[in-house]
Length: 395
Image (cartoon, rainbow, N blue to C red; front, side, top):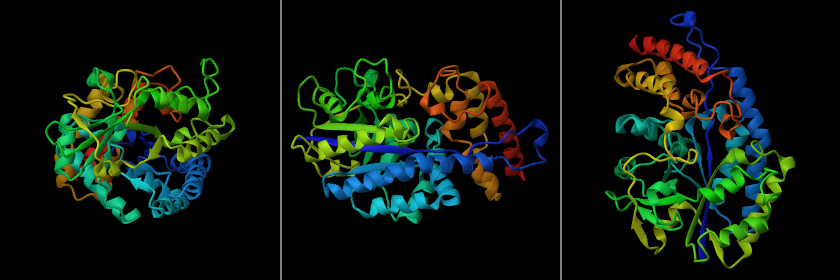
């Protein structure tokens, strides 16, 4: 029997307002409250609330057969608490079914794992506290920001007690190996790796509403056919499908048929004898063959390259990244809690994505809420905020 893992990542940043040079050391209000409230409510109405209701209905319709997992950044949780608390309640209802796992991740959808262990583990620790407080869970599985992973990051997570890590089935790392098997970290062999089957995921994320695609329209029957043929006809014992949750309802609105597609897909998979749904931590109880996977440099789910260029690929991003983490000692020594929280929020991947020239000028689902006219404008605004945060941490 093939085991299939559905995982959804939820990450919404605290978006910055326009912050000018002359605001530095005069105004410490960095975040656009109107946009943050508006977008949180919009996403809740289009995606989170109706999608959660759909998932809950499917769990009840197929008791014990449909399972899934979520990683929800701390920033998203706080936005929900501030502007849309009913989203939190809907996730609590899902967790209470026993068929939903909440995995660990970073507090602010941070790219700190690309800098160093101490900054990364601070994000992990704060997220653990928030998940315990909000959902009463202590995660044993981990999904890093944009599934960023390396051998070293896996070691850090193993030291922190995590047993399962979700990451990308990057072709340049796997070589001839298949993403449809269970892997482990080469130095922490107790850390199991679930690899995202990105080709299957992209059929939904990138091509679901592409009228030029030769498989359009995508139906549940077609997708299950793709699943059946995903491993050259051989049995694929472990199929991992990870998506941004906003794919359902926001990137593809209800009128595209995305909700009907997922309902039909889950319904067909739940009744077949060929597949069974699992959550990430359930692989620890299964007697699955495990092979070592080496990832000597960081991989992610970004583009064809599966690298980190989307966040630190150009000179603007690298300068912002360098200046951000130069403040780590100030963060540790400061007693200004507001400034410390702002420094954590500035680590969010979205801020660096706005500075990226990789997708500039092209439609890209992760930039649906782009607010800057250019990567340079995003950089200038970010650095103005960062310079003021530095002054507040020094005080």
